[in-house]
Image (cartoon, rainbow, N blue to C red; front, side, top):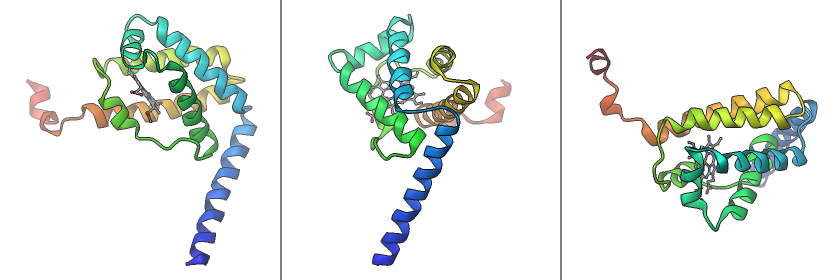
Length: 155
Ligand code: HEM
């Protein structure tokens, strides 16, 4: 049992080291994650469609949200285990959530990276990751197998 646990923690450490090395190669550090989150949610707040949806849910709780999102992106980039949460459940509680908001979210994220990313590789890595998560969230929140009928799409 001890051996199994030791093996697992060595595996986790190896994954973390690989992630840290990958991020170092593309010039990503904790300061960048901070700048990305600050700049992105600054833009979200002024966006005509995204701003109201976020603020309706987060008014009075923005500082906590920003800290959580920094932990989230650090966990994704560095595999640091700094975020344990349930993103799907969190979004289920957001009023006026709609599939059309996701491309707008991604567009704003891309514009933010254009400004704050240290280089093209870092931008590409964060975009690809955000697109994958956005797609999973869209499916988890909106996919309805009952509507997934090719015959319906033809009509
Ligand atoms: C249309 C797009 C989106 C909207 C309107 C949206 C909105 C929100 C809101 C309002 C919250 C706060 C929930 C709460 O604390 O009550 C939240 C949390 C969160 N969002 Fe999004 N979001 C969107 C897309 C995304 C995407 C694409 C990602 C990841 C790349 C993401 C990651 C997260 C995470 C990790 C949390 C924290 C969940 C937790 O509480 O553990 N969101 N989002």
